[in-house]
Image 1 (cartoon, rainbow, N blue to C red):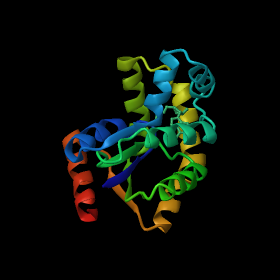
Image 2: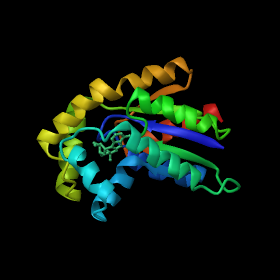
Image 3: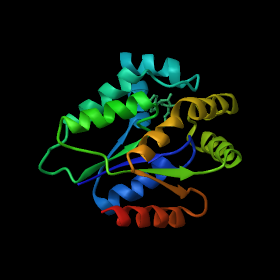
Amino acid sequence: MLNLIIYGAPGSGKGTQSDLIIKKYNLNHFSTGDILRKEIVDNTELGQYANSFISKGQLVPDDVVIGMIANKIDSLDKDKNNGIIFDGFPRTVNQAVALEEMLKVRNLKTDLLIELIVEEEELINRLLLRGQISGRSDDNLETIKARLDVYENQTKPVTAYYEKLGKYKGVQGTGSIEEIFERITQVIEQTI
Ligand code: AMP
């Protein structure tokens, strides 16, 4: 059992690296961003509500994403669960506290938070490029700047929370996808 948080600013490569990590370690991938985007495409009530925040680069309220993650954990087949990678969650200290609590009552725990460290100029360039390729409506300069502000002010404190728990590891998030994955693998191998 390996429960990881992949953490980093928008554009730091969390989704790309998660895809490689889940394959290597046979983990379940829980991405709050992906779940919310699916709700938007399906035009559900939750999707419409979430989009009013996402389109402005703001965070969706804590209770919504915390509830979504709790449902995902409860939907797992306990006998077949090798572990979970949390991607884009937790994004506030409140969410981190809720995650640790919801895992504890289910006799589970997080093992590690891995931060992908990338400087801001590179993040903006990557997100603008992704906006052109994927058409993600929140990858435009105005919304990117808002998301980076939200990251600095609301999400950054999550790292201190996991440092206190002795579970924080940072890796350089620049270079080739393979190089970054190699750094992540080394950190995981030190833990398991
Ligand atoms: P992402 O794909 O992880 O970059 O998420 C895209 C957007 O979804 C974010 O800018 C937020 O508006 C929203 N979102 C995703 N995860 C969370 C979360 N854990 N808490 C609040 N909002 C979130």
